[in-house]
Length: 113
Image (cartoon, rainbow, N blue to C red; front, side, top):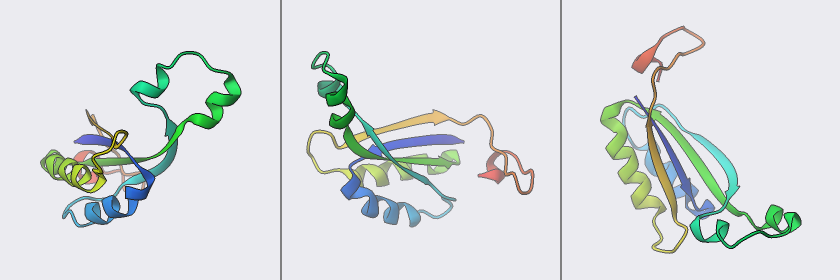
């Protein structure tokens, strides 16, 4: 199982999530509104705290847990639908998910995803 985390521009959320819903076998996703900074923004040097609180860039975080066979399809879909060609399009991270447990039934592993 894999844990895919994608940070995308907010205006791309609808097209990304609609495309992800088309992937057969994908059981769901979590969407979070987040703020952060990238390579250039964070390295500009110290700034007043008040300025830092308001200058973080808004992004959307998408989290997907899926079986290994779906990873490349999920990543390709996010890359295609989130791409604008402009700086700050976002990032995708893929990590191993050691286990999953469905609370309602107690199922474990891929069956719980």
